[in-house]
Length: 195
Image (cartoon, rainbow, N blue to C red; front, side, top):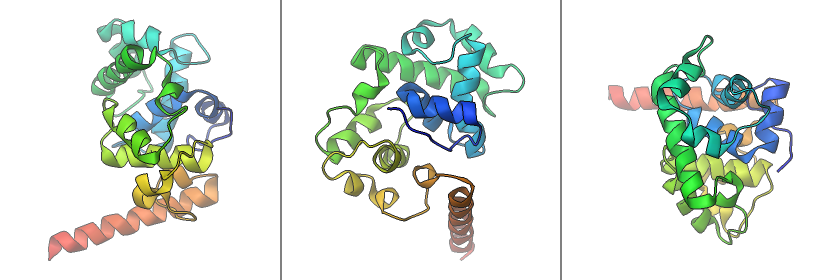
């Protein structure tokens, strides 16, 4: 994995996301209740605060939980809810250590079908169906991991030339299209709720 992503909209943070499978997973985990760029800049911020240019699942899994929460809480905070997200990141890393020897790429490398990959992603702590499908679409669309049936397993997020999620963001123009789509979806949900 060594591609250029444009999710954090910061060159150093995006470079880390493109070369570090763990950083990409952590960014996806953080992508809730905060702007996408903030979430995907998080792995770079965490790595810097750990004194590294990468993330290590073994190190994070065994880090003192209170100290790790404090690390995420330092200003500027890595997330709106740094304490709970610190716990989730550690749970993710502990799972990766236990099931994949700490190597996040093993979650998807060599997987033969999109269904199997979706199952593996959904087993990750903090990854429900939607988050798993979005990450699966990101793997297929931008990171070159395309097991048989990956688009179908990713659902609507796997559709070609769609602008639904982070999987479709390749620069400022596509970011604007994804934002517009999300606003449309929120407006439709509000209208449906008002009925």
